[in-house]
Length: 425
Image (cartoon, rainbow, N blue to C red; front, side, top):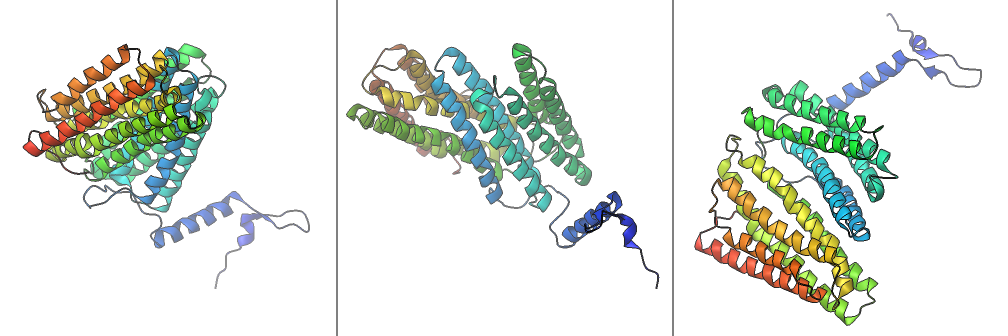
């Protein structure tokens, strides 16, 4: 029987040391390992995962933990720089982080087949998000290079996932090709920003995110069918809402602690928690449930644009909730004293933006202005008025808490009368 001389795949080393593998030897080893993984079903080609009933995976929940860190760092940065510049910086960086999460979620919504390669890619992305968190405190200064490199790593990892899906999922290639173009352009523009100073760098960042985010809109405009999983997507969005609402809960605890449990801080913290609870209630029983109903009505067809309104409507909504969380700690610390104008503006503006985002998203998905969300839009006006008055922090947050409780009560009544149709999340 003929034999194969395996020694030709190894380089001889010095006496007393083991030989080292040649490139051909490593290739044979990797090929064998790949065959073994495929034979055991651990490596499988991706496919559309939009037909079977499924919920968020344990890996997705683990992945979200890294974003908790980033949101906390951004909120901390806004508290340290409670100025107009700090607010604008918070808005810009949160948008970048939100899109990193959203784009990963859109891919997983369609193609999460949970094999070894998908898991390794997702875990690598999680480490890159941890890097974003580590750089977020000075993402436009000392750690700008690290922030860019971590974001580019996220785009390249997503690019690899889409490239793999393009190879194996023939029926979705037209749409995947659009996503490949947008993701690749975004990664290239961010990488290109590295040698540029200040404003030019931020322009490239913005254009890069915009080019990337145009992918879903181009898919809709071209009427390319890349269906979404309509059960999985609302659940993922609701989990991100919980993530950003958690910042308000943490801020109450930190504020009371830093104020050394003074009576004013404790009372203000209690009212701030009521406000946060009302935000949670309004989203899960009203805003999110109404949007889910409209999404189910739109079905798999992307021609109406309801899917895009739903996806991109999450940005102002989550941004608003994160801003509220960032402001709560300073409000609790102020207690019965007036907060700074910026803290007051961020808190009331965050609540107003949330209410406007809820009303506009649901009206846009329903494709009619009179969609039954008049009370949310009216409440946004009251929240803006709250920013104008120079009041103690307790009064400022108290007005918002009462306002949001009224929003919940009116919304539940509208639902009971059938003026707003709801599908529980």
